[in-house]
Length: 113
Image (cartoon, rainbow, N blue to C red; front, side):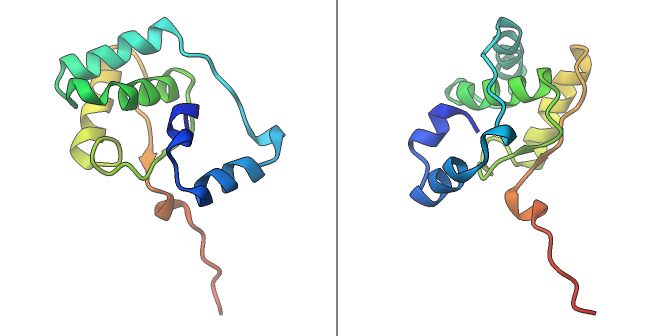
């Protein structure tokens, strides 16, 4: 999650993030390489120009090799056609593909056997 996204997030999300132990949080700076990659996503029409913040978020996760990018944004991020578009650009520009999932896909349920 970016700090910008957290500003407008629901209180329960803010509380969850604020309760995370500091050792689980890694802060990264926006680098020019991420801005360039975000612009390629837009140029390739993965999303429109108004989604540049989302593109920067995905580019940062790609460049810094996040294991998974988790988002509730089903319109611009957690969307099969968009995921394919981001990964197509990533592979053509020499970056790895990125796993993009919703929080619901990461919930682990206890088995009652």
